[in-house]
Image (cartoon, rainbow, N blue to C red; front, side, top):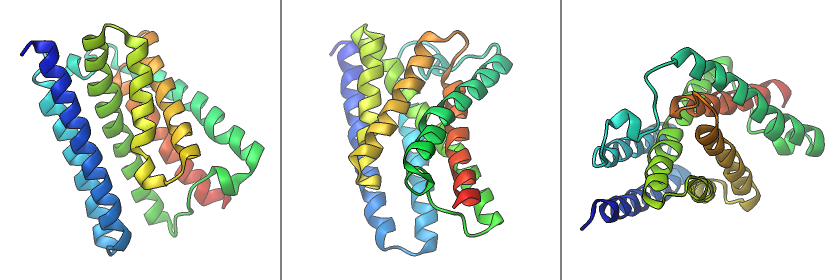
Length: 218
């Protein structure tokens, strides 16, 4: 088996495992208690990150590069994350609030300040984890295997949107998520100093901001 064929097989296996874990978590948390609803998603994300890290080690080159990370210019990466976050928050949250109203555009209200803090921390970790997996491992590997980075962005964005379906059960929400994934992927591909860390922080800030806005406005 060639190195490229091995990478494709590993990607398919990782994608299947991640999908299976996601479906399992949705079913487990649907009927589970509070502890289950907290522990199961955390465990699922830890497993996802572990799978991506293990799969990326099979690629040639340094692990950090195979996941789309950069060791240099960390400050610039973080400043760029802030700019991307502001742009996407305006486009995918503030504009929808104006068009369809806050009830449709936002999520659920946190019951307390302590709960909101926990949600914000979790959302930041979710953003970093999902970007490590999708814009890090999948996008980097698929772009290398296919030789077509834009196609890799499109494929991983669609997969990212569909991956959310078991949880949202809403194709419109999946399309919105896919569109955001496309923007994050395109930023990673086209913007100088934009790394997986950049889009991970931007993603986490976006999710956290939605939680804060939902608590304030709803």
